[in-house]
Length: 224
Image (cartoon, rainbow, N blue to C red; front, side, top):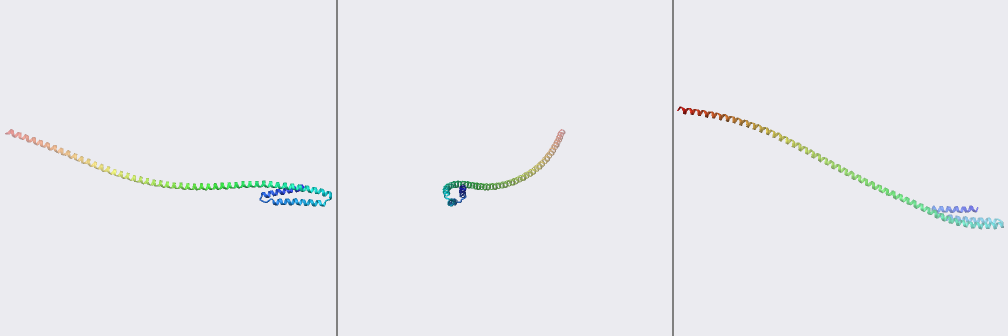
């Protein structure tokens, strides 16, 4: 029975420690322990009075032993409860701190990652926008350059065509002039040859006439 009571008291001390670990004050448990010890003492005294004189002495001794045992158990329970409470509180605080630190670290990491991801997304968007703008500008410049090249090529082709036309016209005119000059030269040469032939004929005729005149004069001279 004494052992049962001791076990009961120890159990209550353990409960008190557990209550403290969960935030409940162990004063209530301590009060219950004292009440239990007092109740046990009263029960022992009452039991002693009902027994005979020799049994009364024995009961008294037993009650004293029970009281002493209860006091030791109570002290031991208090000590164990204090130690258990301290250990439980330390463990709970350590667990709570570790959990809070882990939670804070997780939150901080999540926040930092989210911030970094947001920044990276913003930079990527900015880069894409810049690239798009540069591409658009480059395409515009290329189009403009192509247009200018086309215009220049068209102008050069027009000038080449004009120059070829002018050259053809000049060549045709030069050929015409050359043909005309050749015709004129041929005509002049023919006329000159005709004149030369005429002059030779006239000269021959004059020479013949002169010869005839000379012969006639010679005959006249002989007749005299």
